[in-house]
Length: 330
Image 1 (cartoon, rainbow, N blue to C red):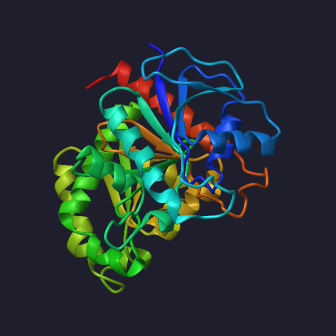
Image 2 (image 1 turned 135 degrees about the vertical axis):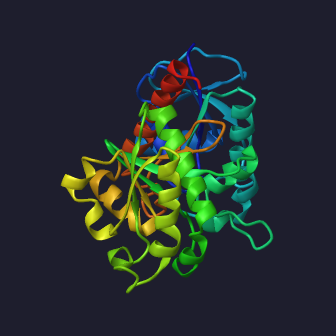
Image 3 (image 1 turned 180 degrees about the horizontal axis):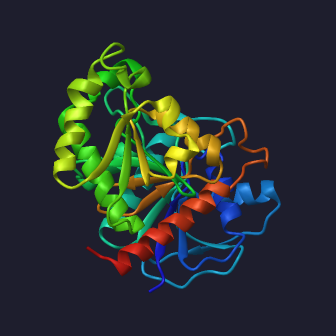
């Protein structure tokens, strides 16, 4: 059965619409449905000088469309979006698109979600916080835990914490949350990547992984006991490793994935290795969701220079995961 993929356009003032237009220039073994303002897509196509025909989607069609065609479930912003210009008027429609994509996938109107980047600062309000797609979908889906993992070829880096200020990270590393993260990562690697016994390297929190307690005690008091407990349950875990040497090639060949303690500990290496081709995968959701490895690039929006490589890779990864789950549905 041909998959139906929901493509969310992200921040309408960013490069998301341009990415969707570029994606539509090739045929896909899936029906791609853009959840977007048609005006943004047509403006992007005109800017790029690329052909684009939009086809209303009835919520059930599965026929793939030919190159230069894109199915669309239309949304209309109160103000016509302009490249590179954020507007508070975009917020509610952008969130509605994300909600509809998630609820539609949960009721099987879509088979997976692939998201273009959103501007967190434009969506986050004091009385209605928004820290990112991952946390937003976790709340909508009622998931107890979700793990953000980025994939660049054979390199997979997951995060124990996501979008937190650095000063809050240490307090967020607790035995229960770390064990839950590792359990989700272990299960996701088994289900979606076909690894019967995933080998997971766990990074320390402190420089030199604490250096036997001289540079911090989180490794001794939290990370090491948690790893020991999960090893007793059969998980193949190593570490805690010093983050500055864990990504050496001779070590990576022995790992299937790396768990970093915080965002900027693990992702710089991955993005150096594969920026523009890497994919963000949400593990632990009841649905398949992938995303690009970059932000809204407001400075590039409207320039015609946006690279759709990561969006293309995110679609390919969503299709690969759907295939893996069909082969091994448990």
